[in-house]
Length: 76
Length: 223
Image (cartoon, rainbow over all chains, first blue to last red; front, side):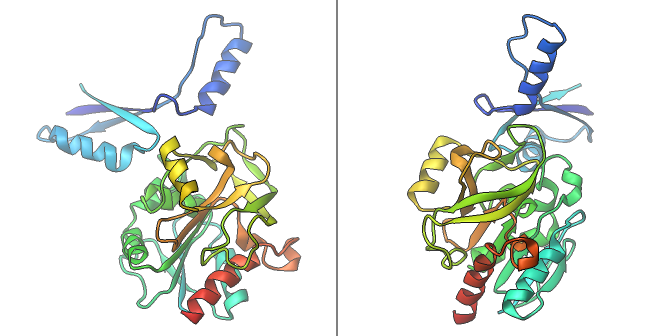
C-alpha cells in the first residue's frame, strides 16, 4: 500500500521559508498570492496490513513534530 | 565527577565540548557513540554537542533523538543526571521531549554565526550559579535552526517557573520572547543555542562560557 503523509506547520506558527517564497513570487510579478506555507510530503510503501493506528503513531512519534506541525495521511 | 560527551554522526562540536569540560574539571570526559544502547555507569554529567546530527534529516535533531543512546539519556535525566545540550544538542533535547518547544528555521532564513550578548535570566540553576542574575555575557552562536518556538501557555509557564536560563539581549533569530536557553522542570537539563564551549579560553576571544562549566562541575563535585 502506498501512503502519502503531508506534514504542515500548524496555523499560527510562523513560516519564514513560506514568507520568503511569497516575497519571491511577488518579486516575479505574480499578483494575488495571499499566503505561502511550505510543508513536507513523505511517500511510503507499507504492508497492506498496516493499521491506521500504526500510521498515526509513525507520524506522531517521528514524521511530524507535534509541537509545531500537523499531519494528514492519504492512502493511494 | 564523571562526565560523558555523546557523539552522533554529524556532530562537529563534540571535541570542543570535551576539551571545555576537561579544561574546567581537569578530567577528560568519556566519549560515547550514538549507537551505544547503554551509557557508562555512574555518570553525573552528559553533554550533547553541536553539529548537524544525521545531516539534519527530517528536522534538526529528529533522528538523533530516536537513536539508541538517547533512550538511556532520557532515563538518566529522569534520575536527575545533569544534561547539557548545546545548539544541535538543544534541538535533540526538544525532539526527545526532555525540553518543551521546538527550534525552527531562523526568522531571517540565514545561518547566523557570530558572538551575541546574552542575558542571564536565571542564576539559580546548577548550570548558571556562577553568573549574576541579569548579567550580560558574550557567547558565540552558529545555527540555522535556532528560532525557539512554544505556544503561549508553555512560554508563560517557562517564565513563571524561572526556567528561562538565557535570553538574547538583542533579537537574533526570531525566538519567542528572545529565549536562548531553557531548563527542564527538575532544573537538571539545560538546552541552549549559544555555544559556551566556544568561550572557555582567552584564545577563543572570550571566556564568558567558562562559568557555566564551572557552575555545573562544582555543583556535581560537591554533591
